[in-house]
Length: 343
Image 1: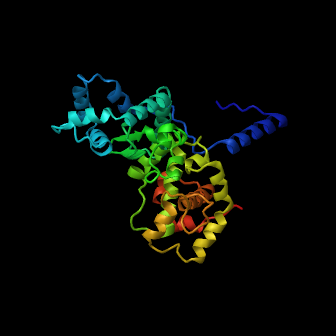
Image 2: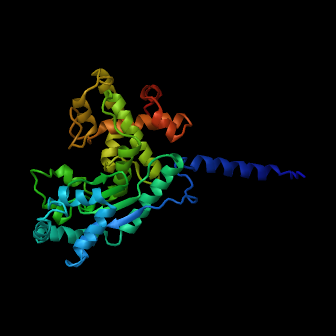
Image 3: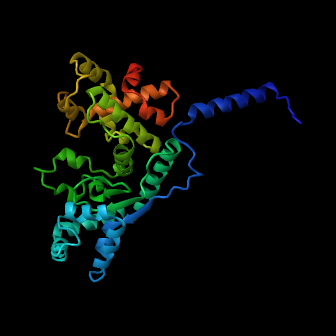
């Protein structure tokens, strides 16, 4: 039997107001992940290598190599350049490497900075992938996150199953071991980017652009920018609580500058007739990390092509109710047609 109870006008008004407030204040990207059974394993490889006794280290490395072969090969052969663990000279090379005074101090700084923070970072990354699992139930997700010292080889390294994170690149630009890096290799703008607030963002973004929404190799300029916009929007969906400037790897000042000059950058691209040109040179200038975006005022930030692509995608998603899976497959020209600049 249906039972309906009449409500007085004030009660109806209050209920309607509460409903409207809930809808207007909710973030559509902040989905419910409470039912997810996804688990992201974590391994502190840097800590294992540092704290395992020398007599037990060979067997420990052998065990790790069986489980994470690509990560272990990357760690020793590419990052530390000691050769592979199976090489006859490895033991001697590793012993010599660990005696390096800079390596010792770097390892100590990593311990000091991250000893108590990594469980929280793992949880933030895991929750991010849980959200992507809700949005993209058929997407590939990482099984493990490996916290490591890449010896400045890279911030994030993705295999088919793991994400390797070079913790040394998140120590902070003012840390002594970062300031001491040779300036002819690690320019000031590179050191400036080595801040801890980007760690979770980089982990998720690195996996997204490797396994879910790859940057195109045969795209025209605006298509490449919009593809990067999709990558950043998916990263935002994974980490909806993250600030926009952090998502874009900008300071607040850089982000504000980009917002103020969004129209100017767009009009520059239009006037130069380079939107629909396929140019590796243009895309390197507009999309890759640098001290600033080439061909534009040096007081502005780098990667304005990524910023613009993200703004174009956000403009489209604000106007259309589509899933993230639909967004990934949406042709760039359809997204571009709906671009609106909010001055």
